[in-house]
Structure formats: structure tokens, C-alpha cells
Amino acid sequence: MDIYLPIAEMPINVFVLMGIGIVVGFISGLFGIGGGFLMTPLLTFLGVPAAIAVASQANQQVGTSLSGALAHWRKKNIDFQMAFILMIGSLIGTGIGVQIFKWLKQIGQINLFIALSYVSLLSVVGLLMLWETAPRLFKKEERVRAAPRIPQPALDSQKGITVGWGAGTNLAMDFPASNLRVSMLLPLFMGVMAGMLVSMLGVGGFVMVPAMIYILKMPPRLVNGTSLVQIIFTSMAATVMQSVSNHTVDLLLAVLLLSGSVIGVPFGARLSSHLRSEVARFLMALLILGVGGMLLKNLMFTPDTLFSIDVTVL
Amino acid sequence: MMKLFSSLFPSLRGGRKADAAIQLRGVCRAGESNAAWTRGRLDRHARMRSLAMTIGLYLLVLLAAPFASSVAHAEPEAVVDLAEDFIPVTEDFDGARMTVFGALRSSKSDIIVVFEGPPAKALIRAKIKQYGIWVNDNPQTLEPVPSFYAVLSSQPLNKLMKPDALEKLALGLNALSLNGAAGEGLKLDRAAKGLYIELPAAVKIRDKKLFRADIYLPPNVPVGTYKAMIYEVRGGAVAASRETSFKIEPIGMASMIRRLAVEHPILYAALAIILVLLIGGVSAHLFRKAS
Image: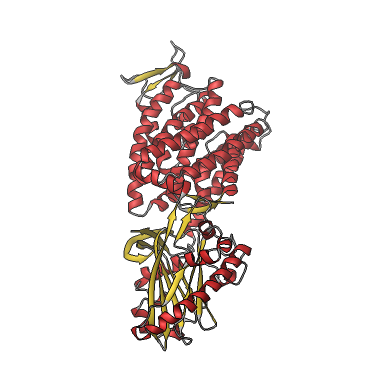
């Protein structure tokens, strides 16, 4: 059954779209990540223009991250104060990102930019994960749901809280929920980065989660929920700004993807409790590298058509 | 003309507008031969309509004959009509069919029909390989170009007219003044998308009196006002021509969404956000146990 996407201006099969949503949702649930890094390339493989795929994916991400954040909220796994600071940064980042996006669209290099960014981002993250998980995977280890190896943070001996970057400066801020003291510039800056990523590439948590563990030194327990809260607002801002500046948000596309995604997530989440964490992360690394490889192939091989053409009715 | 049909054959007429979003789902996709489905995988409804059209045409010729002979010296206009003057694009739009039909003035005539979409601006970027990857080169603009262009004829164009005559009237893909690598690229691209079409046998002539041309407009057809130009060709020259037009417009949800997105982007974004928040929130509640 085909449906006509009003903004992408193309007919597309409803079941294929929902199928993509279910698969990506399942994978998000399984690995505990947002599915943006998978969703955008899959949509472009289907022929949806990359700019519309990115913006609509940001829109549907509002729904997936709300759904995820609510689950974490019930388990009290959210540092709202941190989420707030990250959010302020990400609003700035989204504003910058959307403008860069607009400029790239004007000079006709947006597709190239998206493809190149995806290839580099996916290969770096994929290789890092592979490097981290592969050795542990083949060791006979006891089955623990191990947290990723975190460099042992420095502790303030008096208060027993983690001391992060810039903790001694005027801008230092205490985050009681995370038991952390860090300069507020760091989460602010990371928020800016996250906002740019969401608005230009439609990806969020997949880079934020490791960054919050390794750079911000937040307790891993709080990282997923906190980043999800921040992504809700970042994606909302991206939706509004993309819609105003670029008219690239396809509401129907977002709703169909999300409808599939919310079905897939719980199944993935259920399966994840039966999967060793190293195995899950190893599989995810392979998946990430696979998607990256496919995008790289598209960049390097001779394209089907030697022209990229935009026709606008006057 | 259609009014004439409907008054004569009210039972045969059927839902005219709905019909345009056509019966032949999936039979012919963009770029495939139009002839395949013209040849008769029409469903019953279309068959009846086709019959009505033929009967109507005969009547038309009968009615027109005395009139035509009385003004024979003044080169009467070719008698033509379109099956539809409006094609709605709805959410489930998967292409539509358009038919042009009419009467020949001479049994020796051939017919060329040109369908032209609204004028457009084309931004063409050649893909070039730099540092091992394919990137877009600086753009070239062609303006105006037809957003849709189809030439249907009763015989191959080069058998009907000389190349320079074709060029003068911009008949045929070769005659379109889209020069250079960019122009050729545009032609290839549009042809691959089923938006630039040449169908050298799509005009059917019946009893040397009536003609009928069917075209399949693919789902990705640009919306706007279309021109249909009908040329009656005899002895290598145009003996008569006629121009008519029809509209392809989005209606229903798709057009509402599009209009909202362009005219009220903030409202549109708000709607998009509320929708996904609702779906996300409800699903979180429904699948509470699973996560």
C-alpha cells in the first residue's frame, strides 16, 4: 500500500516504512541507543532525499526519546539538572546546525556532507566499540552485565564526589544526582555539539552516551535517561527550526516511522536482558561498521546517474 | 464534450474524478512502456468509459460534419477534447491516466500530441570524482524547462516531419532546446523518472477518422497546469493544431499538510511535535512492563 509523502513528494510503501521503524526500534531497544544513525541511511537508500530524512528523523526522535525517557524516569535514572544544562547548550547548537544545514543545501553539498559525516562518525564509533568489546568477547568471563570500563574518576576526599573538568574554577557546578562537580562549560559545550549533530545528521544519543560517560564522567546508570531527556528537547528544537528554515520535516514520514519504532523497541528491550552486554556491543559495532561501509561504497563507486538534479516548478 | 457524453450515457459515466487516480494500479510504473496498459488491462469500468467515449466521438463527428463542411475554406479547428480537466493528487495517488481524443479532418493525417507540465527551473550539478569520492560540481541553471514533457504520435516523429520542422515546434526530446552536458543530463534524469517521454505509437487512429492518445502520468508527476497540444500532420507539415489544458492539483490531506508546512511552518512543527509526543507517550504507557 503506497502513501504519498507530502514533503518528500514521493509515494512510498507504508509497510516498508513501518518495517524500517520496527527494525530500527528493535535495535534501539536491544542496544539501548537511539536509532537515528540507522534510520537516516536506510531512508536515503529508499530514495528519500537526505535532507528530508534527517529532519523527519529528528522529528520522530522526539517521540522515541520521550518514550525512553519515561521508562528511565520511572526508574529514577535521570539527572534533570544535567539534562537542563545540556539542553541549553543543545538549543544553541541546533540553531547553528540548522543554519549550516541551510547553507550546505544552498551550495548543493548537503548530501555529500551527510554521507561523509556518517561515514566518519560510524567508522570511528564502530571501530572504537569493536576494539573495546572484541578482546573481552573471546575471553571466558563470568556473565556479568558489566558497565563499560570507565577510567576511575578522581574523588574529592572530603565530600566523596566525583571531580570533573574545571571543578576548581568559578564556573564549577555541583550535580547532586550524579554526585559530580564539574565546570558548567563542559556540559554546555557538549550540548552544543549534540544540538549540531541532531540538527545536521539526525543522530543524538549514539555519540552523547559514550561522551557523557568518558568525558563528563557521569555515572553510567544516569547517562541514558539524562541524554534522552536532553534529546527530547533538542529534537523538538530541531523540528521547529528545520521546519521554519528548510521545510524539510515530513510529518507523515515521522509518524509512520515512529509507529513502527514504538512496536519494535519493547521487543528489543526484552531480548537485551538475555544478551551478554559484550555480545550486544560487539554486534552493534558490526552493525555500525556495516552501515558505514555501505555509505562509503556509495561515495566511492561510480553513481548510477552522473548528474544531481533539482527541478523546481516556477 | 464530456457533458454531451454524460447526458447521452449517464449510466456509463461513473465517478469521473475518482477515475483519474486510475484503475491501473501498479500495471505500469514510471518509465515502462505506456502501451502495455493501454493495450487493454483496463478494468470493466474503464472499458465502459472507453466505449462511451468512442460512441460519443462518432456522434461528435456526425454533429460536426455539416458545420465543418460549411466553413471548410476557413480551416476549421481540429475537434479535440481531454478525458479529464482535473486530476486530483491524494495521499494514495499512484499515478493517473490522461486521454486526449478527437476527430481527424483528413484520412491522410497523422497526429502528434504533446503534454507539457508547468515550467520549471533546473539546477544541474555534474558529479565528479575528487580525492576518490564522488562530489557535486558547481551547478548550472536551466530555466525555463518543462517539468513534464511527453510526445505521443501515431507514427515515429522522424517519419512524420523533417528534423528542422520538429525542432521549430519543439516536438520530441531531441528537439527540446536543452543543450550541453547539463541539458543532456537533465533529459536523461527526467526520462529515467518517467517525466520526459516519447511514445511513437501511442496515438491510435480508428477508421481514419478518430484518434485517441492515452498517457500514464507517474506518481511523481509535478503538480500544476498542464498544456496538451495536438498537431494534425499531413505531408510533412502541421495542417492544424489545437491547445488545451488541464490541472493536476493536490487535494485532501497531502495538500493540506504541504500548505501548512510552507505557509505556517511553526504551527506545522508544533503539530508534528504534538503527534510524535502523543505516540511516544502512549506507547511508553502501553509497553510499560516490557521496558
